[in-house]
Image 1: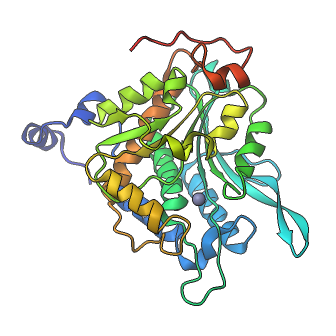
Image 2 (image 1 turned 60 degrees about the horizontal axis):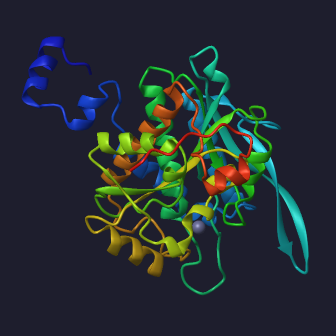
Length: 353
Ligand SMILES: [Zn+2]
């Protein structure tokens, strides 16, 4: 129900705008409840741990496609609506067999007559590692890894639609397959972009945000390598969230998730995780030690769903800013990855700190 205008005005006077709302008045609020619902569905035992080549994975893929459809996105599918089929080889006995399993792709077309031909990818891997045959709980539900990332991507898509203002560039929302088998789905999409060669200008990847505490900072892998950095910093700052340096460089996280496939295709990319402040270090290290790729990565972990909503909001704001910026992101001059994988692309001077 809508409030009458006068009553709404009176209430606004009673409840001053938060910093985030003051910065971006047309940004709809992301919903902790919807994120909880998505993670609950995707991490259910019925989905059998979403191994890329499994019935459970296809059920998850259908759920994402249905969500895209309900939002009114356009299908980015190739062989089937919403689906780009990716060849995935798995060992069967002593041999190996190749199956074709879907990346699920929805498109929000941009509003600018020229910039709409450029695409910002918002990606999250949908697969996990399936089931084991030990006694007891057999299902690797992958609630954090990566139902949480997919739920974040879906909530960002809802936020774009709810904003009522289409971005200037188009957005490609993608639930990727076979990350756990070696970034297979993202590598395939980066090599076979469904929107034509050279049109993807950035990837914002979501993988295993640790949604167990009210995070106060984020780590943005790749942010220091391209003009995406200042955009990430502005988006986080508008939510009162700090940008922190990589606290675990030995984990090599920059090369361990799907954005790296886009990096290898020359595309400036960024990948955020929740930071170490406000109990984050304990939560992060505890998760890696006890629950990562374990059957206990499931819905009964003490999720902070408001942290999920906040994380979705930051990633929405980042994608929004990239999509609306006058210029497409550029690698910084002298960056190792930009020089290696985007040799001929125009670079930007790295701002002095
Ligand atoms: Zn994983």
